[in-house]
Length: 157
Image (cartoon, rainbow, N blue to C red; front, top):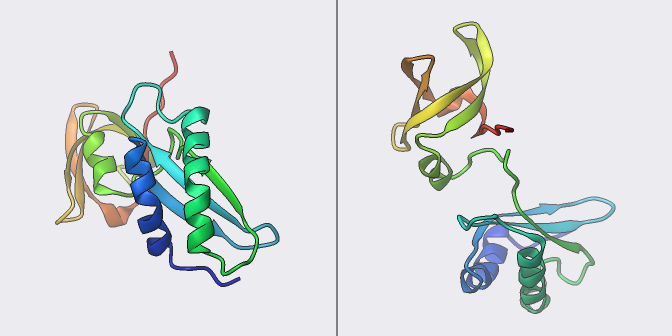
């Protein structure tokens, strides 16, 4: 199925997100038997993205997407969701919002005998492609190319 570029879809949807006070985190199109366009929303507000926020965005996005026609007349399902607590960091803002917080890191190759560990994110240098983390009193740098996934550590009380 032919689909318009995701950047074009994001440009059309971003004003709706801004109007509603949420961040358009990511837009994903999945091909297959049941094609779907999924819009992930995020917010810094207490409580995060709830079902009501998703429904409001969905209702506002429908007419815009009907006019844009991202699939050139072919049917698809529109999903609106939160990216979830365990979402991988993809953008500079993900790293910056989590400085000083505990993160989970999964590496391609072991460092100090481990491929998976938790640490506190101390710094992010996007230009150099590095992060600085602290673990068990030791501070060290990792290049982003070494990391399979980095996400916020989820702690249960």
